[in-house]
Image (cartoon, rainbow, N blue to C red; front, side):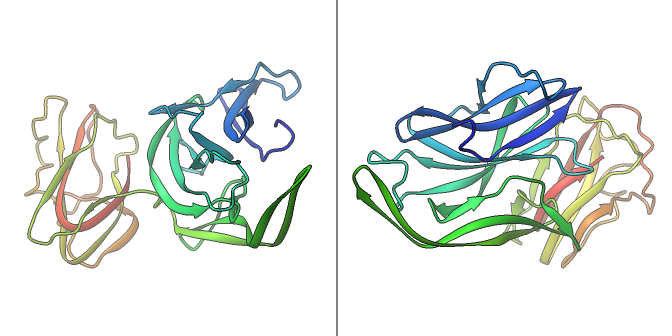
Length: 276
């Protein structure tokens, strides 16, 4: 399985992490990793740690794609996961999900959500960082059309047409928090964070009749002076921004040197990411 697999490699804290496929049992695939400090001597293989964990005897992870994107602190993982076929992992009728994960240390990978549903043996995600251009991210894909698998002893016989294509997604918009109802206000609070660059930037979209307002709370959840909803310069409908500096009383500089919570309320919006 080590050599019959796509490969991802990441570098963190002077250590390389190499990810490849692991054959758990017949018809069941998972992802394993090994580490090295010099790309010559490698440690023992270890199975990938997913949070929450999945039952790898009932799920098939055939393709992995782990990568780092500039200006994003976390490492990103995209895994194609489907239920293990009772007949064979080569069952062309099996469907699954392309799932999004992230990690701070390349060891524990936390689940974010599904990106899309795919048909097994039709879409194959190719490893590597996305191509980024004009606020779009492009992932190269090896797609198979008209694939037909027939059981003929002693092996399978395939008939297929393959070509390279791509998936595209707006930059840094893998997942989002959403409010779809204009007559109901949603509110959420972000965990304690440090504002590192004296600015808070928002990647978001608002729709017709939508709005967003933001306040800042200290660790005891008291409003920080001059950073209330009343002080915030409200974001109104039909905005689509990838990196908008937020402002209070028309000032984008946030001079706060303590850990804070960011609290956001609004209607008819999608928020993709917050940069501090």
